[in-house]
Image (tube, rainbow, N blue to C red; front, top):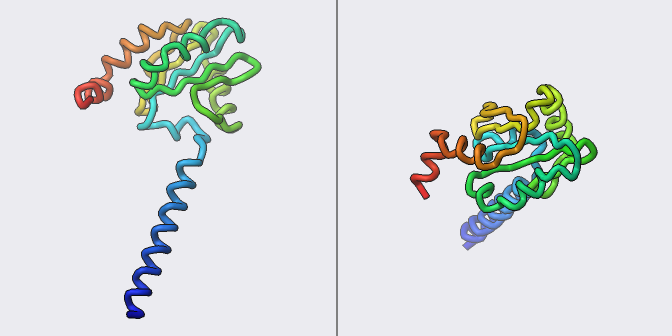
Length: 146
């Protein structure tokens, strides 16, 4: 009888520990661009100003963006806007630093799930970005498995 109690107690403790670990990791924010690797494709945009329309364009394409596992960030010069709930200050700094590395005519960056730079463009053309993504081998496998 005491053996069964010990086993049940150990199972309960193990279950609680696993639950705690799960809740902790799900609540943990992304603190670096590398945290997105193998999970998401990234679109980084250096907006000319807050009213340039990139944010509205990205928000209006939510279904296509979600289907392609895209996380986007638009830096307006004053603010960083994203389709992610919370952006850590370290991630925001990393995005700003990366965008600052490129010429002014390379305002839109596409980063693949593998972490590689896939394109640098002067403006946001979502149809062209979607076509480029849909030709990627990993995306082609994703579409076949759906």
